[in-house]
Image 1 (tube, rainbow, N blue to C red):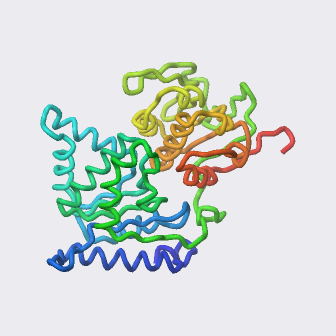
Image 2 (cartoon, rainbow, N blue to C red):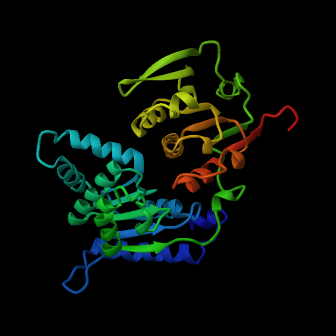
Image 3 (cartoon, rainbow, N blue to C red):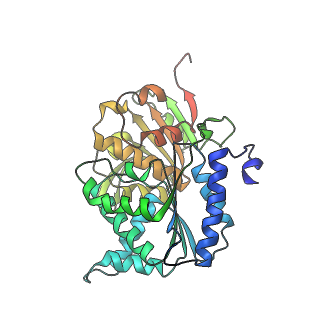
Amino acid sequence: MALEARGYRADGAQQAAIDHLGSWLESHLAGHRGWLRRVPAGVYLWGGVGRGKSFLMDAFFAAAPVQAKRRVHFHAFLQELQARMLAFSGQADPLTKAARALAAELRLLCFDEFHVHDIGDAMLLGRLLAVLVEEGVGLVCTSNYHPDGLCPNPLYRERFEPAIRLLEKRFDVLSVDGGEDYRQRSTALEAWGSYGWPLAAGDDWPGRQLELTTAAERDLTLEVNYHPLQVMAREDDRAWLEFDALFRQPHSSADFLWLCQRFRRIAIGTVPWLDGEGIDVQQRFLSFIDIAYDSGVRLVLGCAADLDTLCAGKAPQDYARTRSRLRQLQPVNLSPDP
């Protein structure tokens, strides 16, 4: 089995999820429907960070005997949905039309890292789920949160409530929480970049990590989705940016996706103690880490302090996932006498 090939044995919760996914998919593909018993629209796996949810999703997706299937990540998929909606601009209810066009292409959709941060995401996801369930697309979702914990912000909780009820009523909701964060095993995953601290003002360690040469363009402005972004340096598929330019300015997830598609190695310097930043800045940082991780970017972070100090204090809702991902970076102590 794939788990055992990587030195693991499925715990009880993981094995139950594996068995349940197999049974659900068999019923979904067979189309067993009746007045008294309706096949669940999908399976919703939730639990703490590093519990193997994404790995279970990968294994399930690879094994599913379905041609019309897709595995998607949160931010990139929402960008795709918005692009699809443009094809129906000027028509009534472009979201429903885009969702039905998507449903016509799929029989199985695997949605990794399901979460909700703002009203725009809430409205898109809520209506999308309703259409996909209505059209009979099988859905498997992973999340750090039980459905009832997906949208805690009281300002728009009420508008997302129908989607929560849909998940709880039409999906099999399974907890996958064996108690261990497998990402913390030293041999679990190859580091996806490096994390250096403390980065002194003016230190070009991030650029050195990117192996920039004299041919690199320095101190330039890129146009990203029709607005400017200051870049310390770029060369080929490598870019060095500063925290201030990337996260203290109103950049969106679409901007971060653009960067991660254009550059395969990205360095970010002067990352400060996050508790001293506004919630909007913190949330941009978290979104960028998610997108870079999911995109397979090699990341270099030059930070003011070690990870525990950097992230001390009050943190946003999704910080546990980000912290786990940052711990997968290779730590580099930049002190003169480490």
